[in-house]
Length: 426
Ligand code: PMP
Image (tube, rainbow, N blue to C red):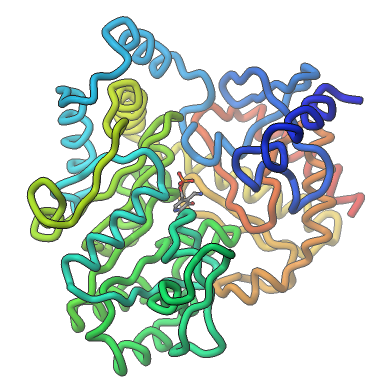
């Protein structure tokens, strides 16, 4: 028995499924989740002292690599000053100012403690601001475990949404319309009929929860246009893409301005942080300025702000995202080459510091049905093979991979050599 196997057995006695977030249980790939005890730079070390090159980075936050000295120093300094006060601090303003500078569509920003809280609050604000109940989301996008957003499509675009999980009232889910990602004609059709009832469109500008699916040209621009025509609030969920696709997020990269943005992951540098922000006129509806209620005991706490602000400052170094993108491209090209050599059909897609690979004959993947049609069994075998070789990829065919600044050329070569070896066994 490995230490991970022993620890997983023990964990299952006290924690549902042995994990505090479902994807960690390796359900999508089989086998036992790895328990980690230490991380440094590009590497994770498990309880059996095995090393892995990490392409998850705590699901995104660790864009600088693990145990970054700047972040550790900032945290130690703040611990010495105080752990938290539940009252205003200067560092919250410094953080808010930095976010507003980096993401120009954000004029006012409110800190929360997770991506889920960020999207939940953004949707409430959009509903409160417009006085409308309906929202539009896209199949294959994930926005956290918010009741209104854990909803799948009914049998047609205009039918009522259906809860994705027990515990969500059908009477709430029916206000959520789930449309096809990258299909602007479908969106226009729905808005032509009931646009004046729709409070918000929420979208991952690069879909990272159905592997990695960038927007087709015109899709995000089309959403902007539809929202302008119908007085609907456009929400970009940049929890994953924010500060990763480019310094200004996906909105900076694609040049489309949402009304509201949800942030998380990189924003907190590894501590639990989310935020939502946007147009002043809309944000002024949030309490205590306005009537839309939102609050948080630990929101903006100084430890989280110290880790987050240090991260944002570090990634603001000129050329940071160019270098990160180069690393992503090297991994992407290496995987493709390894697959070609082994005669395995593979499509690899990326945006800045995120990537995804699809075991498919399709030259590009732009739709959710193409994602689900990929060879999932082959993905599982590849994942397990890479894990044995010491490469930790996302344990699901539907999650994007992340690169970090800590990845060296040698780490990338190590990873590609592993991919060569594993592809030949598939
Ligand atoms: N939005 C997106 C796009 C996400 O990827 C996630 C988490 N993976 C969330 C929201 C929810 O964030 P959290 O897990 O911090 O609640």
